[in-house]
Image (cartoon, rainbow over all chains, first blue to last red; front, side, top):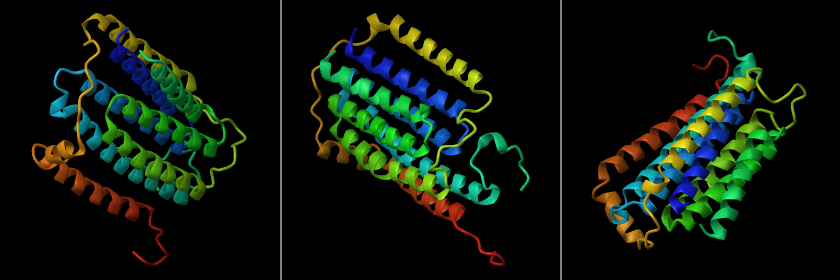
Length: 103
Length: 166
């Protein structure tokens, strides 16, 4: 197995673990944790393809991953702010109990 | 495939599994930090030093702290009594397993066409900085605006509104 295939398999497994966490957990914060794991798996793919691709000196994959890290940080801040506000409003972070759009 | 890769991959996967499987939410956040650290070391192992240290600073330094603060502010630190998994957990697990099966099938089908081991690229921080302010100047500006907007938005969304103050 080539090194690139190993990294891609680790990223695929990490993405699936994050997806399983986002789809099965009841706590909204744990769903956000699953989404963060999926974003990180995508970053690992970008870095691995940059390292083993034909033109690493162009830095395309690495810069893409750095921008992706910045966007993921913004996403985490907004997502956790929303969870805190929902908890203040509905007194729960259990997604099974959040079944109304109306305040 | 070196031994270092296997150790780091096992650390990352174990941290991620613990983050989605543990019952106590604070333990989940700590396991998530382990997974982030494993990923940062994988980046370093891939000769992407800048991305590895950015991962350590942004994820272990900021995102993990944010997650812990959100857990403590929403009083989630104790283990819930009535299960931690949604009642549709089986569907979610099946979807995730199907996604992993398809991704790994695609990777294993294309192993022979993937590039073989390459010499390590030498990338200095100077080159990354020149790329950021040269070729990628517009995305850098857009990310700066996005971060500002997102942080102001997060503060406004999470701000406590007193009664009578609009």
